[in-house]
Every structure is written in structure tokens, then in C-alpha cells.
Image (cartoon, rainbow over all chains, first blue to last red):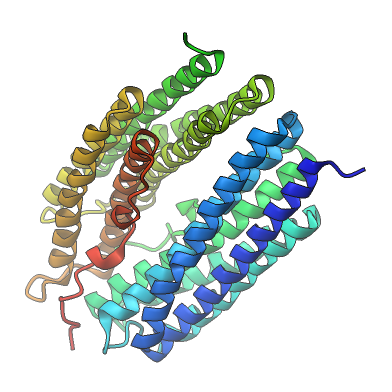
Length: 232
Length: 232
């Protein structure tokens, strides 16, 4: 028999899935605004971020209300605390999409990216968007195997992130300082966005298996190619 | 009469203060390793980050235990949820200090920063370190006025962040692509570190006043100087 607490957790899960869809949409639209240098679209992405933030606050309030009324046991509480942490990941991912749109707006009417960089960023964007949507599916299904796939997709982001730096540091075809700065920031935004998807997956694995896989935690800057020599 | 829950919250506050001290130490040592190109020190900072992570997990476990045993009311729960969010801010600030150390290690034996950039970064580091220590004080004292000061200190970080970009984009004295990339990443790490200190302050204000000051939330990339024209 399903407890009242389990039903409340399901409602919260649904809200997390909704946040993941909104975040994916934000990243897709922010990327379009970046590639098309579309100021109006960038502005919409920036405004719409408030919706994700509002959902996170609503989730916090719901969680507090449930905890006050239901008096759950420790295993239920661990799920609730994990849900709160996931909502932070999702809110932050939305913020990163907003950063992409803000950089587009700042640089308008110029293009932030050169033609050479655009394909790599396009692939980073579609990969990251797919990862956050998959994170939403995993929250819903509690599928620890699906979480494993998502964590491995992060290797694609690694490769693309390194490719951005390879292009930026290629001596034979230098970019302007502006493009170098912009591309570094943008690459970091997409990388951190994917990190949040992985973080969500790790939390699902923890809930399902009870094991926390620290060594797979994202945000490790060893991805930054350490073997690239400093230009003299 | 002090409730058992209040005493537990005080213990958790103490743990948050401890995390803020460890984070400040990490940033100070990471900055020293960056300025001195000190590989051994960088390696220590990287290893020591695990301690902050362990404290965060311990705090989570303590929070869950308290919630299961004490069955607190809604206002108490809001404080607990806020404490959990603060521990995330503090853990993440420690991660950012680790990123500074990792970049130092990656670039060794070369210097990541040019002489021209070092004073600005030194000031960013001392400002950010003071902000996280102040955040710890504020958690302890629940002093909403102190929180206001901290939020204003973020203006100093803004100014310094803009100064980094001014130097990087100055056409008459270009840096190498490597330095441009490294300085952009490092500036972002210090900026985000300070953002987490501000985030903690905003949470204390919320707990004390019940008002959430969204418009002061950090992470806004309007700090990135939009008036700097793109080099043609």
C-alpha cells in the first residue's frame, strides 16, 4: 500500500521532471540565440529563467510542508533531501542556459563564436541538452542503469571541451582575445550544465543502490588539457 | 527554554562555520600555490578538499537524523533546509579553490598569470576569502546587517573581475591565448567563489527577515563588460 509520503514524493518527482524539460528548452533556445545572434530570443531565455527559479522555490515549500505534516522515517527523508539537492542542480542548469543567452546579448550584434568554433559548440549543446532530459527520465524511472549511460555521455562533453581549447590554443590560427574569452566562458557554461545532469544521475544511483560514487563526480578540471604547452 | 531541535541546529551551524574556515584556508593556499607556482602546495589543496566534502555528507546525515527523531514544525524545517543549502554553497566554494590549485598544477612549471595580472588576482583572492569567512560569522550570529555588508563587498569582486577582462582585452598589450584562457577560467572561479558567499548571506537574510532578495542573486553575467567592443 502506497504511503501518503510516497505520493507526495511522486508529486515532487514530477516537478523535478518539469524543471528538467524547462532547462533543456532554455539551453536549446539559448544556443539558437547564440548561433543566430538573435537578441529577442536571448532576451526571452533570460526572462523565462524566472520560471525555473519559481518551481524550485515551490518545491522547497512543498518539501517543507510534507516534512511538517508527514513526519517521515529516515529512508524517506534521504529521498526528500536528495530531491532538494536535485532541484538545486536543475535550477543552476537553468542559470547556465541564461548565462549563454546573456553573453549573446552582451556581444550583439557581433557573433560571439567564429565559424571554426560553431560545430563544436553545436555538438556540446545538443549533448548537454540530451543529458538533462535523460536526467529527468531517470528521476522519474529511478533507473540506475540509465544513470550509468548518462555519466558516460559526459566523456563526449570532455572531448568537445578539449576540442574548444585545442582550437583556441592553435598557434597557426589565432582568435581575437574577445573570442578567446567568450569561448572559454561559453565552454565552461556548457561543461557545468552537463556536470549538473551527471550530479542528478549520481544522486539517483545513490538513492537506488545506497552507494555514492565520489570518483565520478563532475567538475574535475583535469579535463582542461594539461598537456598543451604554454606558448612562449 | 531551548528545544532539542534548536540545540541540534546549533551543532549544524557550528559545522557550517567550520566548513567556511576550511574553505577560506583552501582558497588562501590555492592562491599562494598559484602565485608561487608551488606544485606541492597545489597538491595538498587538491587532496584536502575531501575534508570539506566529508563534512557536507556528515551534515546531511545529521540533518536527516534530526528530522527523523525530532519531528520539527515548519519554521524549524525551513532553517534545516536552509542549512542544507548553505552546506552545498560551502562545499562548492571548496571545489572552486580546488580548481585554482588544479590549474596551477596543470600549468606547472609555467606561471599561469603574467605579472600584470597578479595584483588584481591577489586582491580578488583576499576579498573572496574575507567574504566566505564573513559568511561563516553571519551563519553563527544570524546578523542580517552583516549580510548586507557582504553583499556590497561583492561590488569589489565585480570591479576586479572587470579589471581582469580589461587587461585581457587591451589591444596594446596582448597576452598569449594560454594566459587569456587561464585568466578567464581563474577569474570565473574567484567570482563564483564570492557568489557562494553572497548566496549564504542571502539565505541568512531570508531566515531572519522572511524576505528573499532575488534581485541581488549573484551569478549575473552582466558583470562581464558588455561595453567592451569586439576587436575587428
